[in-house]
Image (cartoon, rainbow, N blue to C red; front, side):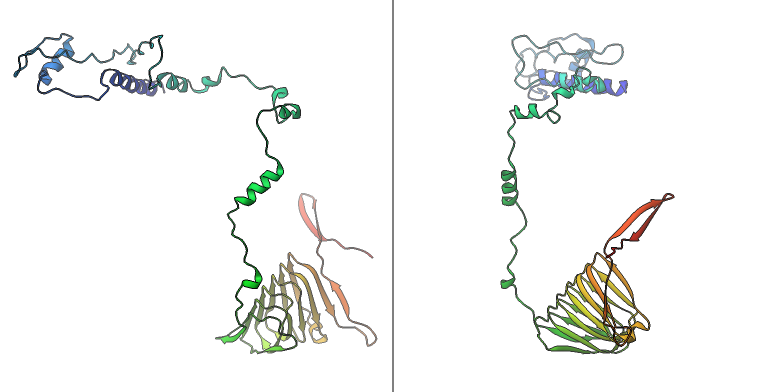
Length: 323
């Protein structure tokens, strides 16, 4: 480390030397000066011998000043201090570099701030601080004025796409139906057909026949009538939906759904479906009556869970509300 610092000091000394004696850069006078080899011998011997010019006969200018002397450790001696009359216009960076080279010792002269002098722990000091604090209204106003988010386009100005129902290979695509009233959108499904329903609002869809799977995405107020499925029904981000299953349905998957009714018929209860929920609320399962004089039973799906540690393991259970 000392060798590297010494190596750096050589170049800094050379920089100061060039700035002082060669302000416009290193040049060589080939016309009126002496030969380069002669000047090199004079610098090495320390004796300057005037030599007449080949053209004008005038004496040659003196050679440049000698290079900086190095001490026994190979480190150049520091330059003389600047005159007391004032510093140079360009500033001297030597003192700054010397401080940086001190390493951790550069902070030895700093004083540790006492807790009584810290403004974040003493409200009285903050009150007398000269730094102005912006109020909450200014902060909120500035954040709104500088918000990069564009203004949201009103729903009335958005272009509405026409409803679409088509069979693409083995996949039914139903989308963009809105406010169909009592009109039922019928889908003649087969065993290998998958049905994708998206961006439908306040409409009724009936799937006739046994399909493979149904996926509902971004629909609001959708009512779906299903006979039987081979796989599952997926409902994603579709609030206030209703599904009635007349036959067999293995699995119902709900993700980010708020408000929904699932009606199961007696044929569905022979092999009840498995229901998996994630981030859902207000989901009710309506099952058929058991006896002739009974009514349909509405059972809400649990929304609140309790987690606790037991013997170093994290256990989670459903919170049941009595009453």
